[in-house]
Length: 337
Ligand SMILES: NC(=O)c1ccc[n+]([C@@H]2O[C@H](COP(=O)([O-])OP(=O)(O)OC[C@H]3O[C@@H](n4cnc5c(N)ncnc54)[C@H](O)[C@@H]3O)[C@@H](O)[C@H]2O)c1
Image (cartoon, rainbow, N blue to C red; front, side):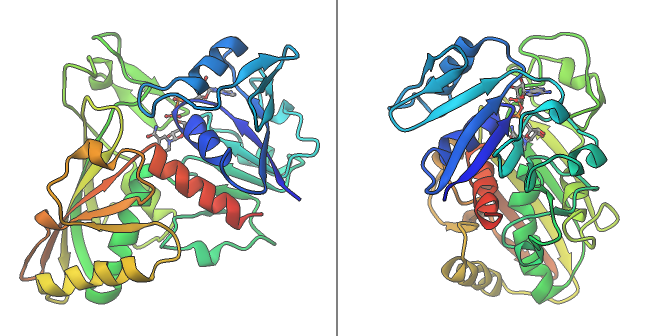
């Protein structure tokens, strides 16, 4: 029997998850709930996408509140409050609305599992593949956060190095594409209590004309998964850049034990050769960010820039913050079936 899914919020992440679920066996997206009141606009934005291109099997609106293509028929609802969703017959609710719901309210919902596509300290578990999926206990965990795109990319690499070399401190800089809460041209400041965006004058500046420095919640998100990796151990900041998708993280680590470049290279190659999910990919080619677009691997180690000096290790990681991250949401959903 197929697992029935309700997708709450069809923005950048919701649509990337939807498109991957449409090609996942034994999973049926039954309902999309979206506060966008125009079903025609929802269908249009699913069919056509500036980043990932157009759908071959396009949807159209049928029976007033459904969208249908050759393979799927999905009900569209337009409910603001998550606790008012019709969850009858739904197994898994994916919340990709970016809204921070009350955890107690979520726990009371009549559905088997709730997947949150943002870090959430109070969730039953925050899961990053390659780090703690073995801790997922379907008998106990109902509210499952799939963490953030940055933490999903970073933590598998940190864990791997820490297990062998014992990280004593470090620093990361995320070089992150545009997000929908930024401004196209200069406008008023941006603040979002629901999306972990602190009062921020810089995000009020034109996202296409600037490299915008900001804080990042990456390390906080890592700490919800493995407590050792917190802001006492690793400092962080972010540079928001005018590209549509694919992020990079510049990582500097100091370890207790001294390494050689060869040793660290082998560590990542060995992980790639033995992994269960598409997590680590080793790149040795002269590639640029758009070459990693629509890539499912989410910790792409760029060996051109791997440096090891004494007890310092320097890495450059790549990841598609939308598609790659969404592929992990789908893998975690499959573990929940
Ligand atoms: N974009 C990324 O790179 C990325 C990566 C990983 C995780 N995330 C997280 O995923 C979440 C969504 O991010 P996004 O970039 O897709 O944002 P987005 O703004 O593109 O999409 C959010 C969608 O949710 C809808 N929405 C808002 N409130 C709603 C409500 N109450 N009920 C139903 N729908 C509602 C909006 O209309 C919009 O279509 C955020 O929590 C974000 O932090 C984003």
